[in-house]
Amino acid sequence: MALLKIGVVGCAGKMGESVLTAINEDVDSKIIGGTEKSDSSWLGQDIGEIIGENNLGINVHSDAKKLFSESDAIIDFTSTQTIYDHAELAEKFGRVWILGTTGTCKGGDEAIEKASKKAAIVRASNMSLGVNLLTFLVRKTAEGLGLDFDTEIVDFHHRQKLDAPSGTALTLGRAIAEARNQNHDEEIITNRLESRKERKLGGIGYSSIRGGDVVGDHTVIFTNNEERIELTHRASSRSIFARGALKAAHWANGKPAGLYSMSDVLDLNI
Image (tube, rainbow, N blue to C red; front, side, top):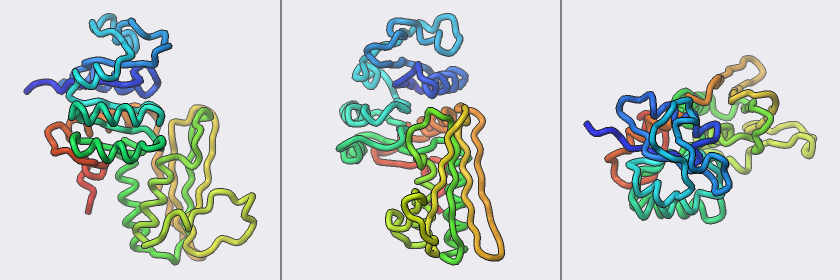
């Protein structure tokens, strides 16, 4: 069986390094190339240097079009600013595109939807297998408990993380809202300093903590006056996101064009 040729955009970043390592260690995958920003000091250097390999014979470059054209699949954990351009390339070349970037840019969602008519795209706010199982369990718990339990989602990340609540926390909140037939955006509580009042029954609260080098912890709390249920996932390494993305790339290879989620990859759409 031929090796899956995988390209990595943003290959010298923290997630890029983890993804390259996962591909390099996988007997069914091959690093075909990697890109970085046009002002990166990594341009022209051997991609093996990023992961401690002496020489892979592949130089880091900044040509995303070239990378998409040469790859079977692209793994993308870059910024929202690149989504539109990468969506166009995925559509043009019909490549598998694994998108783990949190958020989107203006016109990004529409571009992704359009690209999914020509390419198999797996999009997820969190590629961790454990987090996606947590989301499934949270949805089933919310469905069973209904509106009689208050819910609070706590996310704890490193000090450099800018968005709060995290994309994963919002995914968990939306899963709760869907399970209880709620409008998520009308039920959320994110700023208690500006809204000093008793929370209403059924509200979905968010609490965000930032500090240190925490990769990512998420806890969903269901509580009423008599009992409390807590579901928690703690990430101790970025490698879990990389391995999840790699699993998604192999799963999507050969699939019909479409927009998929990690629930599809893990067969959790029950």
